[in-house]
Amino acid sequence: MRNNDKNQEVDLGLRSFIKNLAYMTGGAAFLAGTAPWLTSCTEEKLKEIKKEKARIALIGSGSRGQYHIHNLLDIPHAELVTICDPYKTNLEAALAICPTAKGVDDYRKVLDDPSIDGVIIATPLHLHAKITLDSLLAGKHVFCEKAMARTMDECKSVYDSYVRSDRALYYCMQRMYDQKYITGIKMIKDGLIGDVVGMRCHWFRNADWRRDVPTPDLERWINWRLYKEYSGGLMTELGSHQLEVCNWAAGKIPSKIMGMGDIVFWKDGREVYDSVNVTYRYSDGRKICYESLISNKYNGMEEQILGHKGTMDLSRGVYYLEEDDLIPGMRQLLDQVKTGVFAAVPTAGPSWRPELKSDYVPHPVIKGSVSVNSGQSMVSSDHDGSDEILSAFCQSCITGEKAENVVEEAYYSTLLCLLGNKAMEECATIDFPEEYKIPYMSF
Ligand SMILES: NC(=O)c1ccc[n+]([C@@H]2O[C@H](COP(=O)([O-])OP(=O)(O)OC[C@H]3O[C@@H](n4cnc5c(N)ncnc54)[C@H](O)[C@@H]3O)[C@@H](O)[C@H]2O)c1
Image 1: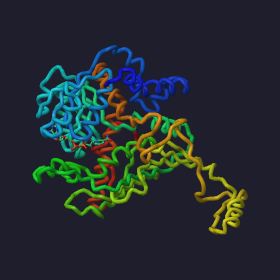
Image 2: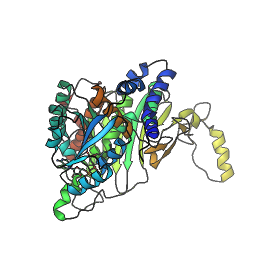
Image 3: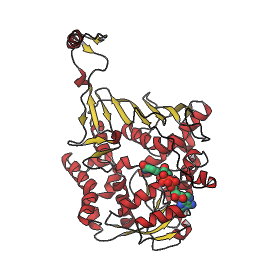
Image 4: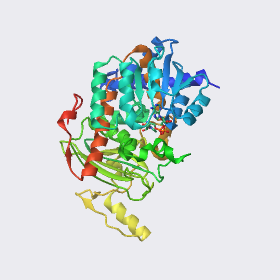
């Protein structure tokens, strides 16, 4: 049963959060400084659209597309009218979730339908740019899955078209609409962890990334992620989210990129790396240390923003303060005598202050929240922002208002993924190319 009360609760979650945060911080100024894209989806603006519903079509009804259908069905101001997929198995599975929608096999049929306000693109990466460009040209508002495109030239074409267009364009970078990320970034910008001195992000999994293929001719269609023609591998699939978060926290874009990538374990005919290490350097010397590996999951998924007074772990929704670590060196020595296990206690200064890590206390970014799934979502809202960003998009389909900076954030994070791949392939240090710079943030 679709429960409208629940819908309203889910839908208002982010909006009342924005209102409360604005209230607590003395007005809406924080939005402009922390998350300007939220200004288009406030509670007041939602009330203005009354009972209007955006007429939405989904293009690409695989795993992520079907996830979006479930979220769409919970958005009161949205109606899913058409689902498009040339692959019958996935189209039928999607129509089973939303039997009132019409099924079509060619996205042109969606674009030719003047009654459709907006499209959701959840196809493999190599189709993102083409379908986005065609959709904008057809006058549709667009919500596209990350990353922005398979190549840097395609990213630039999409960005240029968007700037010329009056249509809204969203990329599903759900962390930008996740309350713990927004709050954590605001805390960083307010100085909680001091000067941001570096970042460490990683995503570790232990799975081959393969999907079962009913017949061999469908290998590339189903397992598109594993082949370079369609996919940017770990960087575009996983890193794009995390690099966006780093730029958001740093307020800058890295200017140098170097890295190494390999197929270490899954030597099964795939073309994309299963192990990547990329260093991104900002012009002021700060670095993002990015790592992903899919044959060991011990380290899970983390986005750590390192400050001289503390560390913000955005994915887990917790922060640690350096001062919590100030257990006097003498106490550490006494503890060691008690346990009989001796280790060096490096100290500095007259207070015997330890220079190295000992015990840090985790403080929750949002009170009462607990991180689960290695920090991939949290209890108190088991939403990761995907439902909220989709709801904001459907609102834009009605109001026509663009979400500020979403496209720019997606543009630069995608470019950094693609440049990371290039640096790994060429085993070279790359400067961010001038011709791909856009007027957003500094380098
Ligand atoms: N934001 C996130 O956290 C997140 C999570 C998972 C996936 N994604 C993204 O979602 C996208 C889809 O990933 P997925 O796992 O659902 O892939 P998938 O392979 O399960 O689904 C892709 C679907 O697109 C269909 N398709 C292919 N060509 C098409 C065309 N011309 N027109 C219409 N449909 C077409 C395929 O038949 C398939 O059903 C990818 O870009 C992926 O990176 C994002």
